[in-house]
Image: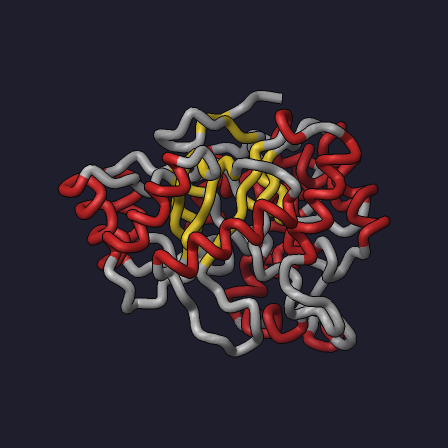
Length: 316
């Protein structure tokens, strides 16, 4: 499988990054190991997680995803073959305050390293901005972690254009580590949170971009055709916002394109992202082996200019 360079980092990634939010949430440890084995065998060797995953699952504490991934990497002896991404800044308690102070990052990183059973993180993200810590202080924490060999590269997620630009300026002016990858919410169903100033900053600074919610929490798979389909689903609250005229028009257009190529709607949605300017690799999750078929479809699918234009227009 062709590997893609992650922005200005020396890291490479598979064309799709596997989202580890499902580990410990919709998949238990045994199921997670099975999924990790399969994605690795298929060549998808970049895994994205966070210290807080999967705190939202009933009866499951934050850090569970990291613990599962760490145990799997150790048992399979594959740490050196994985591009490992995790994050810091979101509270480990539901409703808690976000925190990217130096002291918090240094403590949280040690906790993540222990759960992951590794001595280094390939790419460490500011998960959420607390909008109060001086950007220099946050970058100084990362500098210390890089100097200690515990972090190799840094990135940012869910950060405003203003704070992202301020961070990039501070890195340049103070000889501090620079964010090299950005992680926005971005999909056919939600383009406004990335396109515009944030996208321009990423392009101007050659930041790698790995968007999350690439399938709009499952809406773009086409399995939810009416709101009644959401009953009993874990992602009901996330998906119901897409049930509007625009969302259903996107699904209709994808239906036609997927039929023409004999692929799934998910494959089309991921292929659109892979082919979008400025996107390095979308993040996507799976809970069943059958879901991984869409990953392969997306990697192999080449949407025509006309198909890309149709999807661009219907999703604007």
